[in-house]
Amino acid sequence: MWVFSSEAKPPNVILLMADDLGWSDTGFNGNEVVKTPALDEMADHGLVFDRFYAAAPVCSPTRGSCLTGRHPYRYGILTANAGHLLKEEWTLAEMLKSQGYQTGHFGKWHLGTLAKTGRDSNRGGDRNQQHFAPPTDHGFDTFFSTEAKTPTWDPLWAPPKHNGKWWDPVSANKRAPYGTAYWTPKGEVKEPLDGDDSKVIMDQAMKFIENNLDSEQPFFTVIWFHAPHLPVVSGKRWTAPYDTLGGYHKHYYGCISALDHQVGRLRKALKDWELSNDTVLWFCADNGPEGNSFQGPGSAWPLRGRKRSLHDGGVRVPAILEWQGTVSKGKRSNVPAVTSDFLPTIADLLGVDLPNRPYDGTSLKRLIYPDKNQGVDDLMKREIGFQSARQVAWMRGNLKYYSPDQGKTDYLFDLNEDISESVNLAEKRPNKLAQLKSALQAWRESTKLSAIGADY
Image 1 (cartoon, helix red, strand yellow):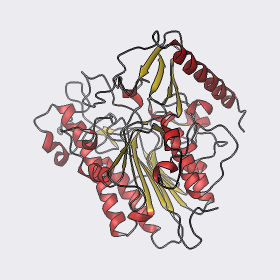
Image 2 (cartoon, helix red, strand yellow; image 1 turned 135 degrees about the vertical axis):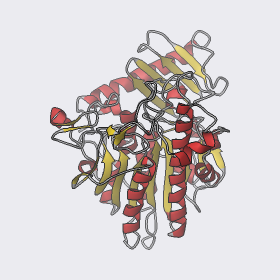
Image 3 (cartoon, one colour; image 1 turned 90 degrees about the vertical axis):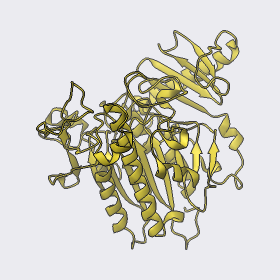
Image 4 (cartoon, helix red, strand yellow; image 1 turned 135 degrees about the horizontal axis):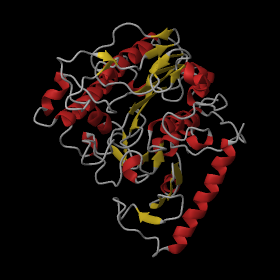
């Protein structure tokens, strides 16, 4: 049943996600070069998470966690372009649809293929029909989505290469199809989709919202941008402020600023539609920045590691929760949170019971209503588990266990004292090390049981 009165309409829910955006790639997290005025304003009007984690250091697994509240190892999405979202998984979209919401997905899907014939994107087509899993199979009424990455400018066209680098386009080069299509429930999108890809996505998302303005039903909108994932390309309007930088850097910052502009456009529309107080708006990224610090312009400083690493630089991401009139504005929280928290938090807000199975996320309702709920201190001590390839990690409050080789080599860090994970405390605190390793092992055994279908 609703937590809200019978006369009150439940809040709309919008989940925004950037792709490969580093923890320090926004103004509100201290970057003085990239221009993100809309996100900075959103941060000023919402709650900024200083310790918000993607469930995985790569794309697809994190996206699965956003919709299921569960670690992706429980249902076979071990890395990017692997497995697909199983129909047995109960998603956030299915939950909200059962509660009367209109549901739509826009942008990068990456939780299964969108085409059964031909060839599309990384895996789509007749070669991988077993992984066909469009958003409409998982609770979404409609979608405008790609299976995987696209260029961040002119998304249907391969950026011309310059000196072997795909992020510095040469306009004189002839364009060729990139190979990743946009899809809707009716099939492949055939009309031209030129210019900024973040705008292409937001155009469709805002049409969906606008079409629901007169409805008695609330809406759930997932907007997963491709920016700033490679291939990184941006238009002159967005690269102009960064012309003194190198090609990759100016396109990288340019496409972040273009994404930011679309966030601002959405927030303005919500205000104009008088929906700002009736909409839960969440922003985060799916993992840390691409490449190493010498190759890529993305920044996770002062964190250690980047995309594909379970050090914090690979999984701690920028995040904001805005719900005007409800969430206190201009606050920052050091409570550890993770993308798996979306489903249990929204279920708790709406008073919806979850199916009986293991969940790796927890409700953050106590942060939203800190004066009405006890237990924020308990959230500070919560535990979060990670595994990716041979890496494993376990966090309990400020302590973090990390191993690059499934526990053969041990690292223990105090993130309060050592945000860069540079001082290994494993030998100095053997009891804490043993406790965290034991908890990690028990959790991993639980994920193994889930993976063989024990939860369904």
